[in-house]
Each structure stands twice: as C-alpha cells, then as structure tokens.
Image 1 (tube, rainbow, N blue to C red):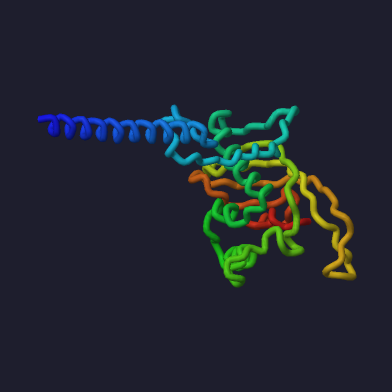
Image 2: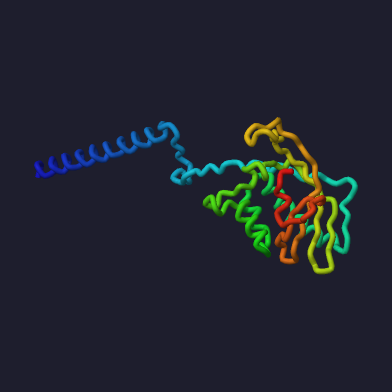
Length: 219
C-alpha cells in the first residue's frame, strides 16, 4: 500500500514538473515574440502583404483659357464640350508625344496619298516605329493650346480651330544634322471631326492643301 502511494506521488510530481516546464516554455515564447523587432501582437493583418502604390503625377495643364471667348456657330455649348474633350485628349497625346494613340484617333485614309502619308508617319516600314516627333519633318513638341472657335457644318462635321504653341529645332540649310537652338512658334490648327468622333483632318489654317495629316508638320 505504501509503495502504491509512493508511485502515485512520483507520477503526480512528474506530471506537475512536466506541466510547469510547458508553462515556462510557453511564457518564454510569448516574451520572445513580444520583444522581437517588428512584431505586432495585436495586428490582425500582420500576415497580409503591404502593397505600395506609386503616387500618380498630376497631369500638366496645357490648355490656356481664351479670355476673348470661344466662337460657337450652329452648335450648342453642351455639344461643343464633347468635341472639345476630343481635342483635349488629342493634345494630351501630343504633349506626351504618343504617336500611336494619336493615329488611332483618325478616320481611315480615303485615298492612296493619305494611305502613303499614314504609313510614313506611323513607321509601318520600320516595324511600326512612328516617325512622328522623331524625324526632321515632324520634329516638334507642344507647349500649350487654346480653343478659338467651334462650328458645325451642314453635313454634320465639326470644325474646331485651336491656337497651338510649339517648340521645334531650327535646322541649318547647309546641314541635315546641325541645328540652331530650339525656337517657339504659335500657329492655328484646324480639326475636322466626323459625327462618329473620329478626326477626318488636322491641318494648319493657312495650309494650301488642307491635307489629312498636314498638322503634324513642324513648320
């Protein structure tokens, strides 16, 4: 009987010692985790990854306000605003020199001449590397623009005139490579926009040909 009691005491003592070790080990782990750098015991989202989104740079304002007021003819202000937004998008692409996006805003070429000019500007022969803004004929950058007038024609097409300020290098006549410092130039450009919002033509107001892509020439 005495031996049985002794064995029970030994078992109880062993169980108590083992339990004590577990408690001490658990407390030690908790203390380690609390003191561990970067550990947040109360953070429920500690396992979630933090994704840092880069701040978007604010778009540069390139549209100047026309204090002389925009001349509207046969078109309401509400309808005119839709076509102004088309031109605004076009000019943003110009500012960013995004030739591919600009080209997509045009209606398809209507003849061989327009098709040939598009192929040259878009660089279809250069693995679709646009020449626009890259070669001498089309080497310019947009500084700013403002609306001059918006007119709706009888056929439904919209004529939008804008004043653009451009900067382009002044090339020397005796060399195809050397050029003078960059010079700024203001010019009035005409957009002819179809009812489906595609641009039919873009040309300088003083152009003799009013070609579809004449507005892309530097001078």
